[in-house]
Structures are given as C-alpha cells and as structure tokens.
Length: 221
Image (cartoon, rainbow, N blue to C red; front, top):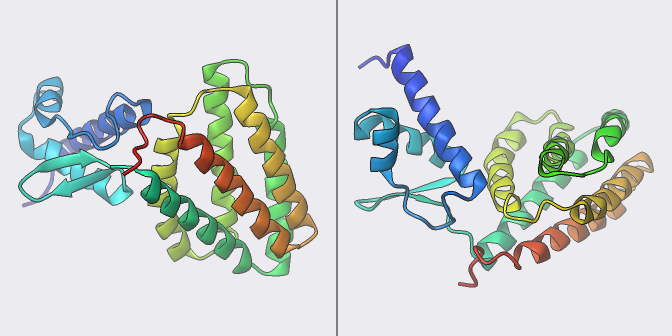
C-alpha cells in the first residue's frame, strides 16, 4: 500500500515530538514510550505512532521490544562506555581515511568553527548553540574521509551521545573544558600528528563519560 504524503508528514511530526521529548528528558532513558499519549496528542491511531517509533529505532534512540512496545534507549554505564569508544574509533577512522591534503582542508574547516565554539555561554540558549557547533565539529572529523558508510555508522552513535549529553548541566565550565580539547584536536590536525589526535580524542571522551556518570538517569547496571 502506498504511503500518502500526509501520512508521511504525520509520522514525521510524531517522530519529531518523541525525539524532542527524549532530548529534553521528558522521556527518560529506559522508559516505555506512552503510545496512547501521542495518539491522543496527534489524533491518530496506534499505527502512525508505531511507524514513528520504528523510524526512531533506526536513529538509535528507541528500542522495539517484541510484544512489549517501544522504549527509549537504556543507557547504563557499560553501554555509555561502548558508545564513546565507538565515537572515538569512528572519528579517528574518518581522519585516518583522509589524505594529507584533505586533513589540511579539515583543519581549515574546523578553525572556521572556532568563533562560534568560543562564543561565551551565558544562558541555556547559548549553551544549546554551542552544542550544535560542537556536534558539527566532531561530525566533520568523520566526514573528512568522504566515506559515506562511516557517516551512516556514525549517525546513530552521535544521536545517542547527543541524547546523553543533553542531561548535563548547561554550564560555561563544561563548554570551556570542551573547547580546551577542541583546540588541542585542531592543533594536532594542523601538525598532522595523528597519535596526539587519537590521545586527545580519548581524553575528551573519557572526560565526557566521567561527567555523564554523575547523571542519576545513567544507571550503574
């Protein structure tokens, strides 16, 4: 059966609403998604809500459990550790897969982001703007190789880490420490020092991981 444009539009709006609720923490990690609430909110049957959660499962934000409905990803300490290991490996793979000339271009591209990265964080809104630039900074590391399969593998990893990071305090202390790492990543690229780059990425993600372990929603088991 052909899916009409209006049906696709409804499914997208529902998916956007669920995604936003996950990112804002309205839906907690490991929580069952209340399908009936979204049915009521959008005035639809259960089918488009389930289609929306299915699309979110491809992003990594939702888990579909047989005979048990749809659930927000359950991030515990071990899964979070694996998530950041995957990010480090994929970001390094992007840089390593780029030619020397492509890495020079990457360094120039990342440097162009620094004015926005280093803009003072004075409110939740400005912190969200910093997060957007931070996400683009790291995405460009993976994109540097031009390998679309790496980018496809990276997308759900980045989305899940964004969901986790949204639970952190929106503080200039966090952005300033992150930017110290960003500066060192850029310097390593400019020197074409891949060993230093890998060490800095590992230090960066270890630091983010340690912050997230202080979030009550991140479970031990």
